[in-house]
Amino acid sequence: MIEYVNSLKNRTDKDFDGFFEGWPNPPSVQKHIKLLENSSYIWLAVDNATGKVIGFINAISDRTLCAYIPLLEVLSEYRGQGVGSKLVQLMLDTLKDYYMIDLICDEKLSDFYSRFNMFESKGMILRNFKMQCGK
Ligand SMILES: CC(C)(COP(=O)(O)OP(=O)(O)OC[C@H]1O[C@@H](n2cnc3c(N)ncnc32)[C@H](O)[C@@H]1OP(=O)(O)O)[C@@H](O)C(=O)NCCC(=O)NCCS
Image (cartoon, rainbow, N blue to C red):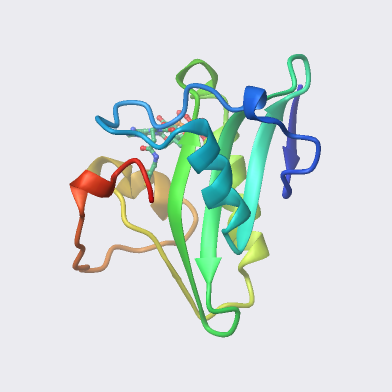
């Protein structure tokens, strides 16, 4: 069974494995945990049978008006079962009192996010690829 939790309590390095699929220079597990610790809000999907984290979403916020969702990922073997949708819904519920909730995604994920009443907008981004593994 998949459990959804909004803290890192009882989680260890060993519970995080296999994320940042396809990233050429991914953050280490320690950096992954650090970015979750430093996030304003997180939700984790945990497989109760193994205790492993199999999906996560995070948000950073000014705690007044705006929130940004930088990362969402479900381990490939757990995709297509509604885990990603559940994580998005939990995070949007958590952020329901903010005016501005933004994220950046590939074109192919527009339909996925549209299901949550999100709509396309134009954005500008900057990527410092040599820092992809985190600082
Ligand atoms: C995007 C992601 C989190 C979805 O997780 P998931 O657990 O498979 O999501 P769900 O099972 O709730 O899928 C919901 C729907 O989105 C669709 N979908 C998921 N990933 C998709 C993708 N990469 N391209 C197009 N559609 C996608 C699924 O087909 C599914 O449609 P269905 O309900 O009609 O079958 C997962 O594919 C993932 O981790 N991808 C790699 C990281 C990533 O792209 N993150 C998003 C960053 S913005």
